[in-house]
Length: 474
Image 1 (cartoon, rainbow, N blue to C red):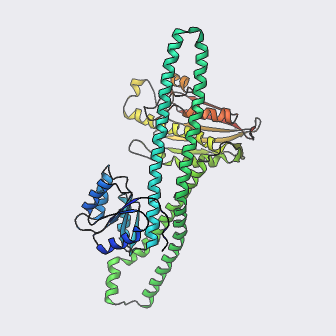
Image 2 (cartoon, rainbow, N blue to C red):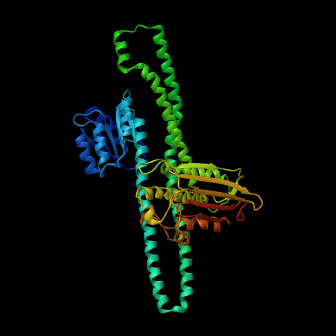
Image 3 (cartoon, helix red, strand yellow):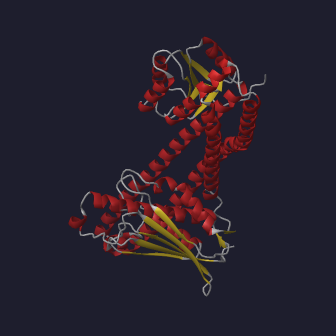
């Protein structure tokens, strides 16, 4: 058998059955992966803490603590919570599979084992594991680069103050130099951020796309096979209404009527979920367009919708607030000649800021600090709301995009400083102060358009974007 070259990894196999351990070990030993073995849940937890494997293949039924308990303890342990767990279960144990996934497992393989299936699933999750590690490393590097630039900026401002005190006649020149440096820094951060994130997002989307399409394609067949098996069984019931005692007992034991009703629903639910995942992959690919040097005619509504899909997790209700509602007031807008990737980044920055403003309004009310701060939220609705409108100004050949939130709003002091690079109202570590500066450069300098806002404390914020329908840079 020809074994493909695979990524390096450490695999921990946990099973109290020596035969299962032997079968899996022999199936995986020629792949180049390092194989570890544990025969019970306690041993698995100890080895996971010590060896930090890349993937754990965990049996459900074991002496002592079972697979579910072991999984729960591994997920609660900071040392092992990020390790992907693949459950090993029998074909008939549907409830076990659902329970395992709800406890944090990423997948399952069925007994008896099929070599190709085991290898494909382990390979896929090992690739996802390595991509996740790479993403974390790249993010840390990016954060360090931003921190370094902020440190350089701080030192530069201090030096500027010293030079202003010693040489007053050069104040104007130094101020202009500092402004130029800030603008160059914003442009550099924008390019590096979009390049790094674009490569990572595109890579992850590509790796996930193949297994998702594989699952999506096979679910249709699974639904058809399920229907055929159910039809066949019902024919048997019709023509052989009095089965043998053992068969009748098995029918009662597995509650066949419930299975006939529920199994197609499970297949349908899996199909919907996989379709949703495929839509997310498409949105990631659309959002991460990395060629920002080419003008394309695009549907801006598609860019907005893809950005909203990526931010969907932030719009959902949580323990702090209710769900944030999105109201779309889209007009009839023809394809707009623009730079798709940078324009998507503007949508992301403005929508993320709108969500932050709404969340801050909930925090302010909850902490009963409204009266003390002098901010009145009488016009803020109980439910967060973001309205997105689009229209065409035919006289000026412009497309107009409006993003309105009912969040905390801005004071005059904040509005005056908002256009300054590095200025942010967010806590340390949550914002760089570059979002609006980058967005303004993208709209005004790259597209020849305009970006402005209207805001009052407690009255929410309106952002307006205008860009030409036909780019002058095409």
